[in-house]
Image (cartoon, rainbow, N blue to C red):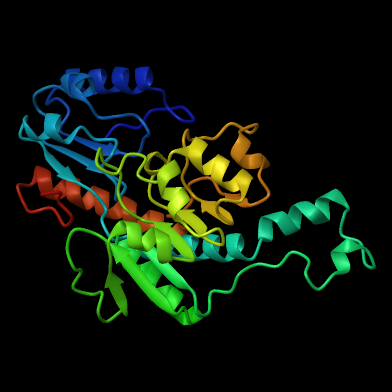
Length: 306
Protein backbone atom coordinates (compact mmCIF):
# COMPACT_ATOMS: atom_id res chain seq x y z
CA UNK A 1 0.00 0.00 0.00
CA UNK A 2 1.26 3.49 -0.85
CA UNK A 3 0.40 6.56 1.19
CA UNK A 4 1.22 9.84 -0.55
CA UNK A 5 1.40 13.09 1.39
CA UNK A 6 -0.82 15.80 -0.01
CA UNK A 7 -4.39 17.01 0.14
CA UNK A 8 -5.20 15.42 -2.17
CA UNK A 9 -2.13 13.88 -3.84
CA UNK A 10 -1.73 14.85 -7.47
CA UNK A 11 -1.34 12.40 -10.31
CA UNK A 12 2.41 13.19 -10.66
CA UNK A 13 2.86 12.60 -6.91
CA UNK A 14 1.06 9.28 -7.13
CA UNK A 15 2.99 8.15 -10.20
CA UNK A 16 6.28 9.03 -8.51
CA UNK A 17 5.34 7.15 -5.35
CA UNK A 18 4.24 4.11 -7.37
CA UNK A 19 7.53 4.08 -9.30
CA UNK A 20 9.54 4.35 -6.08
CA UNK A 21 7.63 1.48 -4.49
CA UNK A 22 7.98 -0.67 -7.61
CA UNK A 23 11.76 -0.11 -7.59
CA UNK A 24 12.18 -1.52 -4.07
CA UNK A 25 13.10 -5.20 -3.47
CA UNK A 26 10.04 -7.35 -4.12
CA UNK A 27 8.38 -4.61 -6.14
CA UNK A 28 4.84 -3.29 -5.71
CA UNK A 29 2.33 -6.07 -5.03
CA UNK A 30 -0.99 -4.23 -4.52
CA UNK A 31 -2.70 -0.86 -4.74
CA UNK A 32 -5.08 0.28 -2.00
CA UNK A 33 -7.00 2.89 -3.99
CA UNK A 34 -8.76 5.97 -2.62
CA UNK A 35 -8.22 8.66 -5.22
CA UNK A 36 -9.87 10.58 -8.04
CA UNK A 37 -6.85 9.69 -10.19
CA UNK A 38 -7.45 7.02 -12.84
CA UNK A 39 -5.69 3.67 -12.68
CA UNK A 40 -4.73 3.40 -16.34
CA UNK A 41 -2.00 2.00 -18.57
CA UNK A 42 0.51 4.65 -17.50
CA UNK A 43 0.00 3.98 -13.81
CA UNK A 44 0.06 0.21 -14.30
CA UNK A 45 3.33 0.51 -16.23
CA UNK A 46 4.74 2.51 -13.32
CA UNK A 47 3.61 -0.18 -10.87
CA UNK A 48 5.59 -2.85 -12.68
CA UNK A 49 5.13 -6.58 -13.23
CA UNK A 50 4.71 -7.64 -9.58
CA UNK A 51 1.34 -5.94 -9.16
CA UNK A 52 -1.19 -8.60 -8.20
CA UNK A 53 -4.21 -6.64 -7.05
CA UNK A 54 -5.91 -3.26 -7.39
CA UNK A 55 -8.44 -2.80 -4.59
CA UNK A 56 -10.53 0.33 -4.46
CA UNK A 57 -12.15 1.66 -1.30
CA UNK A 58 -15.36 2.35 -3.19
CA UNK A 59 -18.28 0.62 -4.79
CA UNK A 60 -17.88 2.34 -8.17
CA UNK A 61 -15.19 1.29 -10.61
CA UNK A 62 -15.20 4.31 -12.91
CA UNK A 63 -11.65 5.32 -11.91
CA UNK A 64 -10.26 1.93 -12.96
CA UNK A 65 -9.38 0.98 -16.54
CA UNK A 66 -10.81 -2.50 -16.12
CA UNK A 67 -9.63 -3.81 -19.49
CA UNK A 68 -6.07 -2.62 -18.91
CA UNK A 69 -6.00 -4.17 -15.44
CA UNK A 70 -7.54 -7.49 -16.46
CA UNK A 71 -5.33 -8.06 -19.49
CA UNK A 72 -2.36 -8.04 -17.11
CA UNK A 73 -3.99 -10.71 -14.94
CA UNK A 74 -4.37 -8.32 -12.01
CA UNK A 75 -7.21 -8.98 -9.55
CA UNK A 76 -9.72 -6.24 -8.77
CA UNK A 77 -11.53 -5.69 -5.48
CA UNK A 78 -14.09 -3.14 -4.34
CA UNK A 79 -16.46 -2.52 -1.43
CA UNK A 80 -19.77 -3.33 -3.06
CA UNK A 81 -22.85 -3.01 -0.79
CA UNK A 82 -20.90 -1.73 2.25
CA UNK A 83 -22.07 1.82 1.56
CA UNK A 84 -25.61 1.02 0.39
CA UNK A 85 -27.30 2.13 3.60
CA UNK A 86 -25.38 5.37 4.12
CA UNK A 87 -25.81 6.47 0.48
CA UNK A 88 -29.51 5.61 0.61
CA UNK A 89 -29.89 7.77 3.73
CA UNK A 90 -28.34 10.71 1.88
CA UNK A 91 -30.65 10.10 -1.08
CA UNK A 92 -33.70 10.22 1.19
CA UNK A 93 -32.33 13.38 2.82
CA UNK A 94 -31.95 15.01 -0.58
CA UNK A 95 -35.47 13.97 -1.58
CA UNK A 96 -36.89 15.59 1.55
CA UNK A 97 -34.71 18.69 1.29
CA UNK A 98 -35.53 19.31 -2.37
CA UNK A 99 -39.25 18.52 -2.31
CA UNK A 100 -39.82 20.62 0.82
CA UNK A 101 -37.52 23.49 -0.29
CA UNK A 102 -35.16 23.43 2.70
CA UNK A 103 -32.33 25.18 0.86
CA UNK A 104 -34.60 27.90 -0.50
CA UNK A 105 -36.05 28.45 2.96
CA UNK A 106 -32.59 28.85 4.48
CA UNK A 107 -31.66 31.39 1.79
CA UNK A 108 -34.80 33.38 2.62
CA UNK A 109 -33.86 33.53 6.31
CA UNK A 110 -30.32 34.66 5.46
CA UNK A 111 -31.62 37.36 3.10
CA UNK A 112 -33.89 38.88 5.75
CA UNK A 113 -36.98 38.53 3.53
CA UNK A 114 -38.87 36.35 6.04
CA UNK A 115 -41.20 38.93 7.60
CA UNK A 116 -44.39 38.25 9.51
CA UNK A 117 -47.34 40.11 8.07
CA UNK A 118 -45.72 40.37 4.64
CA UNK A 119 -45.84 38.14 1.58
CA UNK A 120 -43.97 35.46 3.52
CA UNK A 121 -46.92 35.19 5.92
CA UNK A 122 -49.25 33.82 3.22
CA UNK A 123 -50.73 30.30 3.44
CA UNK A 124 -49.43 29.72 -0.07
CA UNK A 125 -45.84 30.69 0.75
CA UNK A 126 -42.95 28.25 0.15
CA UNK A 127 -45.15 25.24 -0.54
CA UNK A 128 -43.47 21.97 -1.39
CA UNK A 129 -44.62 18.50 -2.38
CA UNK A 130 -45.63 15.53 -0.23
CA UNK A 131 -43.96 12.13 -0.43
CA UNK A 132 -47.12 10.36 0.69
CA UNK A 133 -48.99 9.06 -2.34
CA UNK A 134 -46.21 10.07 -4.74
CA UNK A 135 -44.64 7.94 -7.47
CA UNK A 136 -40.90 7.40 -7.01
CA UNK A 137 -38.79 6.29 -9.96
CA UNK A 138 -35.37 4.78 -9.22
CA UNK A 139 -32.87 4.39 -12.06
CA UNK A 140 -30.45 1.71 -10.91
CA UNK A 141 -32.07 -0.86 -8.63
CA UNK A 142 -28.93 -2.44 -7.21
CA UNK A 143 -27.93 -2.30 -3.56
CA UNK A 144 -28.27 1.48 -3.21
CA UNK A 145 -31.44 1.73 -5.29
CA UNK A 146 -33.10 -1.09 -3.34
CA UNK A 147 -32.14 0.50 -0.02
CA UNK A 148 -33.62 3.83 -1.17
CA UNK A 149 -36.88 2.10 -2.10
CA UNK A 150 -37.04 0.34 1.25
CA UNK A 151 -36.51 3.57 3.21
CA UNK A 152 -39.00 5.58 1.15
CA UNK A 153 -41.76 3.05 1.86
CA UNK A 154 -41.83 4.42 5.41
CA UNK A 155 -43.04 7.74 3.93
CA UNK A 156 -46.15 6.08 2.47
CA UNK A 157 -45.21 6.71 -1.15
CA UNK A 158 -47.91 5.55 -3.48
CA UNK A 159 -45.82 3.68 -6.04
CA UNK A 160 -42.20 2.70 -6.64
CA UNK A 161 -40.97 2.02 -10.17
CA UNK A 162 -37.50 1.26 -11.50
CA UNK A 163 -35.83 0.83 -14.86
CA UNK A 164 -33.32 -1.76 -15.91
CA UNK A 165 -32.60 -4.62 -18.28
CA UNK A 166 -34.00 -7.37 -16.05
CA UNK A 167 -36.40 -7.85 -13.18
CA UNK A 168 -34.69 -7.60 -9.80
CA UNK A 169 -35.38 -10.52 -7.43
CA UNK A 170 -36.04 -8.24 -4.42
CA UNK A 171 -38.35 -5.86 -6.28
CA UNK A 172 -41.53 -7.74 -5.46
CA UNK A 173 -40.97 -7.65 -1.69
CA UNK A 174 -40.22 -3.93 -1.94
CA UNK A 175 -43.39 -3.33 -3.94
CA UNK A 176 -41.39 -2.03 -6.91
CA UNK A 177 -42.34 -2.45 -10.56
CA UNK A 178 -39.96 -2.43 -13.52
CA UNK A 179 -40.99 -0.06 -16.31
CA UNK A 180 -39.32 1.41 -19.41
CA UNK A 181 -37.19 4.47 -18.64
CA UNK A 182 -39.47 6.74 -20.68
CA UNK A 183 -42.46 5.66 -18.58
CA UNK A 184 -40.49 6.17 -15.37
CA UNK A 185 -39.54 9.72 -16.35
CA UNK A 186 -43.06 10.60 -17.45
CA UNK A 187 -44.90 9.13 -14.43
CA UNK A 188 -42.58 9.81 -11.48
CA UNK A 189 -42.94 12.67 -9.01
CA UNK A 190 -39.41 11.92 -7.77
CA UNK A 191 -36.65 10.53 -10.00
CA UNK A 192 -33.57 9.14 -8.26
CA UNK A 193 -30.40 8.29 -10.19
CA UNK A 194 -28.58 5.48 -8.35
CA UNK A 195 -26.93 3.66 -11.24
CA UNK A 196 -23.20 3.27 -11.89
CA UNK A 197 -21.46 5.35 -14.52
CA UNK A 198 -20.53 3.73 -17.83
CA UNK A 199 -20.38 4.78 -21.49
CA UNK A 200 -23.97 3.53 -21.73
CA UNK A 201 -25.19 5.78 -18.91
CA UNK A 202 -23.10 8.82 -19.88
CA UNK A 203 -25.36 11.91 -19.59
CA UNK A 204 -28.49 9.77 -19.76
CA UNK A 205 -30.28 12.55 -17.88
CA UNK A 206 -30.14 15.13 -20.64
CA UNK A 207 -32.41 17.86 -22.01
CA UNK A 208 -34.74 15.29 -23.55
CA UNK A 209 -35.01 13.38 -20.27
CA UNK A 210 -35.90 16.51 -18.29
CA UNK A 211 -38.51 17.45 -20.91
CA UNK A 212 -40.21 14.09 -20.30
CA UNK A 213 -40.45 14.67 -16.55
CA UNK A 214 -43.34 16.36 -14.78
CA UNK A 215 -43.07 20.06 -13.97
CA UNK A 216 -43.65 19.06 -10.34
CA UNK A 217 -40.90 16.44 -10.40
CA UNK A 218 -37.79 16.43 -8.23
CA UNK A 219 -34.56 14.91 -9.55
CA UNK A 220 -31.98 13.41 -7.16
CA UNK A 221 -28.56 12.08 -8.12
CA UNK A 222 -26.45 9.88 -5.81
CA UNK A 223 -24.80 7.93 -8.65
CA UNK A 224 -22.15 9.84 -10.56
CA UNK A 225 -21.99 13.38 -11.90
CA UNK A 226 -21.49 12.30 -15.50
CA UNK A 227 -24.88 10.59 -15.52
CA UNK A 228 -26.25 14.12 -15.97
CA UNK A 229 -25.94 16.77 -18.65
CA UNK A 230 -25.45 19.46 -16.04
CA UNK A 231 -26.15 22.39 -18.35
CA UNK A 232 -29.47 20.80 -19.27
CA UNK A 233 -30.29 20.30 -15.60
CA UNK A 234 -29.49 23.93 -14.78
CA UNK A 235 -31.73 25.06 -17.63
CA UNK A 236 -34.57 22.78 -16.49
CA UNK A 237 -34.33 24.16 -12.94
CA UNK A 238 -34.15 27.80 -14.06
CA UNK A 239 -37.12 27.57 -16.42
CA UNK A 240 -39.31 25.52 -14.10
CA UNK A 241 -39.24 22.52 -16.42
CA UNK A 242 -38.77 20.48 -13.24
CA UNK A 243 -39.46 21.53 -9.64
CA UNK A 244 -36.15 20.89 -7.87
CA UNK A 245 -33.00 18.81 -7.68
CA UNK A 246 -30.87 17.25 -4.95
CA UNK A 247 -27.29 16.36 -5.85
CA UNK A 248 -24.58 14.53 -3.93
CA UNK A 249 -22.50 14.11 -7.10
CA UNK A 250 -21.71 16.60 -9.85
CA UNK A 251 -19.19 17.58 -12.52
CA UNK A 252 -16.54 18.62 -11.77
CA UNK A 253 -15.73 17.59 -8.24
CA UNK A 254 -14.95 19.69 -6.32
CA UNK A 255 -17.50 22.12 -7.73
CA UNK A 256 -16.20 25.71 -8.04
CA UNK A 257 -17.82 28.00 -5.45
CA UNK A 258 -19.13 30.31 -8.19
CA UNK A 259 -20.76 27.49 -10.17
CA UNK A 260 -24.28 28.25 -11.51
CA UNK A 261 -25.74 25.24 -9.67
CA UNK A 262 -24.92 26.83 -6.34
CA UNK A 263 -26.85 29.98 -7.24
CA UNK A 264 -30.16 28.17 -7.82
CA UNK A 265 -32.69 28.25 -4.97
CA UNK A 266 -34.22 24.95 -6.10
CA UNK A 267 -30.96 22.95 -6.18
CA UNK A 268 -29.77 21.24 -3.00
CA UNK A 269 -26.07 20.46 -3.53
CA UNK A 270 -23.81 18.60 -1.08
CA UNK A 271 -20.15 17.59 -1.59
CA UNK A 272 -20.22 13.86 -2.47
CA UNK A 273 -20.68 12.68 1.09
CA UNK A 274 -22.93 9.66 0.54
CA UNK A 275 -20.65 7.18 2.31
CA UNK A 276 -19.23 9.71 4.79
CA UNK A 277 -20.02 8.12 8.14
CA UNK A 278 -17.44 6.84 10.60
CA UNK A 279 -18.77 3.28 10.51
CA UNK A 280 -19.15 3.07 6.74
CA UNK A 281 -15.68 4.41 5.94
CA UNK A 282 -14.07 2.17 8.55
CA UNK A 283 -15.85 -0.87 7.14
CA UNK A 284 -14.82 0.10 3.61
CA UNK A 285 -11.17 0.47 4.64
CA UNK A 286 -11.12 -2.87 6.44
CA UNK A 287 -12.74 -4.67 3.52
CA UNK A 288 -10.25 -3.14 1.07
CA UNK A 289 -7.37 -4.36 3.23
CA UNK A 290 -8.97 -7.82 3.47
CA UNK A 291 -9.30 -7.93 -0.32
CA UNK A 292 -5.58 -7.18 -0.68
CA UNK A 293 -4.47 -9.73 1.91
CA UNK A 294 -6.61 -12.43 0.31
CA UNK A 295 -5.22 -11.68 -3.14
CA UNK A 296 -1.61 -11.78 -1.92
CA UNK A 297 -2.26 -15.06 -0.09
CA UNK A 298 -3.84 -16.68 -3.14
CA UNK A 299 -7.28 -16.81 -1.50
CA UNK A 300 -10.65 -15.58 -2.83
CA UNK A 301 -11.26 -11.91 -2.09
CA UNK A 302 -14.23 -11.14 0.17
CA UNK A 303 -15.42 -8.70 -2.52
CA UNK A 304 -13.81 -9.43 -5.88
CA UNK A 305 -14.93 -7.85 -9.12
CA UNK A 306 -15.53 -10.74 -11.48
